[in-house]
Image 1: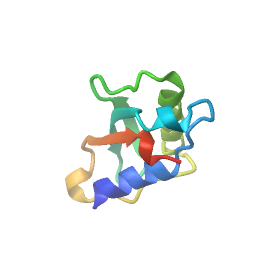
Image 2: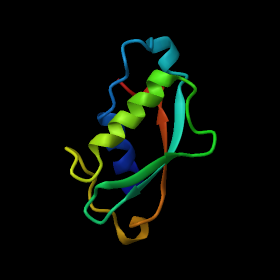
Image 3: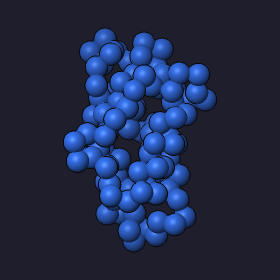
Length: 99
């Protein structure tokens, strides 16, 4: 359930740039890892090996979304359960699932 929460929070806060047509968006994928602290703020994120999408606008959208979840940011995740606290969480951003 916590992994689904993280994925849903990210998907709900990403706005695909208008420069990416919907026909191209459905084929875009990126893989990242996130580290969330005990209060729900993002401590760090990084691309998984080979995880960037090769679409600069899509990748920038992902990076910008993560800024809002950083410490002091406007958004945060629920407090992670002990099994996810201070551990990397792998997330796939699927352009076909975004608005």
